[in-house]
Length: 123
Image (tube, rainbow, N blue to C red; front, side):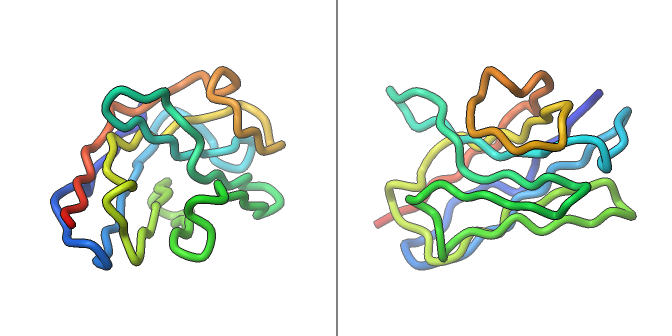
């Protein structure tokens, strides 16, 4: 399984970014795909996840109403659409795969990780 994350960058407060995670070596329909982030000096935390088979999604309270996790089955790609960004969203964002259709917010239950992409939100 390989996950390739991209799309990070520098954006002003209130702006938008879309991260992409292209997956290879897996079948999306039997997995959960998640996004996590790690800010400087902090632990990695759950952001959002989507379970393919039942199209179930979950979001961290801190991003509800601002972030969505759309997908493109044909491209084996999951996205993180981030709107109304805030300085506290600054972090390295990682996509990850959980080999089960039930969503989890626990990072230890994800077994494959992308390399991370940096998002910086300026005030």
